[in-house]
Amino acid sequence: MQEQRKIIASGGSAVGLSMFASFVGLCCIGPWTVALLGVSGAVSMARWQPFRTYILIVAGAMLGWAFWRTYRLRRVCLAEGCAEKRPGKAMYISLWLSALLLVLAVFAEQLQWLLIDPTPAALR
Amino acid sequence: MSKSLMPLTAAAALLTFFPLAVLAADASQKPYVVLDNSLGQLRSDFNANVGKVRMLYIVGPTCGICLRGMSDLQEAVYSKKTDDPRMATFVIHVPTLGAHEANVAPASRLIINRYTTHYWEETGITGRLMQQVMGVDKYVWDFWAIYAPNVRWSDERLMPAPSFWQHQLGGLPAEKKLDANVFAAKADEFLAQVSTLSARGPAEAAGAK
Image (spheres, rainbow over the protein chains, first blue to last red):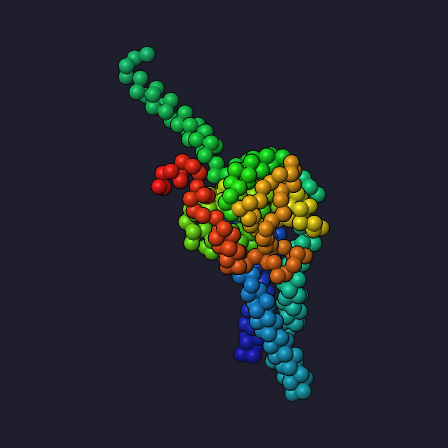
C-alpha cells in the first residue's frame, strides 16, 4: 500500500508538472492568459519559459520512476503471488494517461502554432 | 420651480452628466495613438525624431512573451535612462492572437517613458510591411528594432530597414533572439552618437542652458 502511495504521489507530481509546463508552453495560444491572469500575470508566466525544459525533465524523471516502480511491483507480485499488492488497472491507465500528457506538454509550443494562426485576421 | 427643488435638480443633473463627462475625458486621454493603415502618423513621428535613436517595437498586447519582452526592456533600457531625450520609442500594438484595442491600455503600462508612444494599429499591416522590409516569409511581430539617429523614413509605405533588431519568433535566426541586456548595450552604442543638447527640441535646449 505504501509503495502504491509513493507511485501515485510521483505520478501525480509528474502530471502537475506536465500541466504547468503545458500552461507555460501554451502561453500564446490566445488572449486567455491576459484575460485570466492580467498583464503582470502573463509576464510572470512567460518568465517560466526558459525553465520549461527542466520542468519537463523533472516530470519525465518522476513519471519514469512511477512506471518503473509499478511494473517492477507487478513483476515481483507475479513471482511471489501477492494478489493484494498488485497495482490495479486504474494505476496503469492513469500512468499511461500521464505519459500522454507529458508528450503533449513536450510538443505544446509546436501544437499551439498548429492550432492558432497568430497573423491578424485581416491579413490571413 | 420651487426653491427647495433647485438643489435636488442640480444634484440629479450632476449625477446624470458627471459619468458622461468622465467617460469623455477617458476617451480623450487614451495612453496610445490609433493609427490608420497608411501609418502616416507613425511615419511623421518617426521623421520628427531624426537625430535621435529610435526604437520601434511591433508587439501583440495579449502575447505573454511580447509582454515579457516589454517588461525586460523597461528594466534594462528605460528604468536606467529615465526620460533620456536622445531616444524616442514607438511601440506598435497589432491584433495578433485575437487582440483587441481594449488590450492595449493595460499592456502600454509596461513601458512608460516621456519619449515613448504607444500605437494601436488595427489591421496589423505594420507587421506585414516589416516582413517585406526584412525579406522573411512570415508575419513579423514580437519584433524589436533600433534605428540609428540619421535614418529617415522616406518611402511612402515601407519603413526603413532597422539598424539593429531582435525578435522572439520561431523561424528567424536564433542568435537574434531578444536579449534585453544586449539590446540595451546596442542602444547605448547608438546613443553615444547623439549629444544630449542636439536631441532636445530648441525650446527644451534653451531651457536647459
